[in-house]
Length: 339
Image (cartoon, rainbow, N blue to C red; front, side):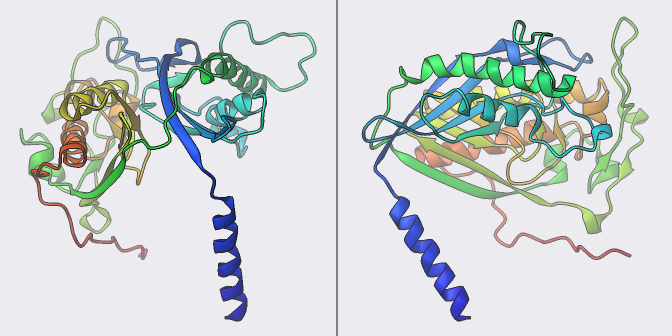
């Protein structure tokens, strides 16, 4: 017990000693060369925005950098049996290794549900490369990220006293509101692998119909009836989370609607945050099938439902308006017992 108290006290003292005066600012840039739209079932739709949040000490030296971007970490695959930060970690290490002064770089994933990593042209030389192809590719992604980001850092304006705020809400997942057209009534507690996961592309592609759904149903015991959504602000910059893998159309819609509802100048979307509720699509994209549609959890309306609730949470934070729905105050924890 005494050892635990001493360790806790030491941690507090160390944290206090590490506190420094800092200033913060952000920037948005367009970086098309590091990702590409992998989904053929919908029309090409790609947003190349990369968000940067810079934190500096009082003397102006870089303290930390956050990078927000949409890029799957899928350079390596499951057959490699390799633990790796993959392409997202390559962005972090690629920028860190090229900074003029040491500082941590943290990658925050965005709407990467349909965005594959892309190797930037001109960063791979066949001469003198001893790494295997995938790691060579990741090194190129890191170098490309550094060349896009580092020249922009000095121009980012910073503030010592931006308005800060954050709001986290346990959002109820109400089946009748998620799919009000009744198309998912047979799967009240969720369903997965509802449509063909193979490509549904080309001249013969057609939407699936509700009658063709053949989902693996989620049992009530394992169902999820709430999720957490967070909105935060750093001055004129807003941040909003999504608990899954949003496709670009979902992420961009959430970003734009939050900006319009709040008046924030810029908004970053943080996917894969505070839980994982599979892929998030618009209804018309769900009905086109394919891998991402087959990997949804709560039907065609789930992505739009989360957009609406995310906008409500952001508006509540920014303008102190009513949420417009009743948050979950005592979340149910599913049983983790098997058998």
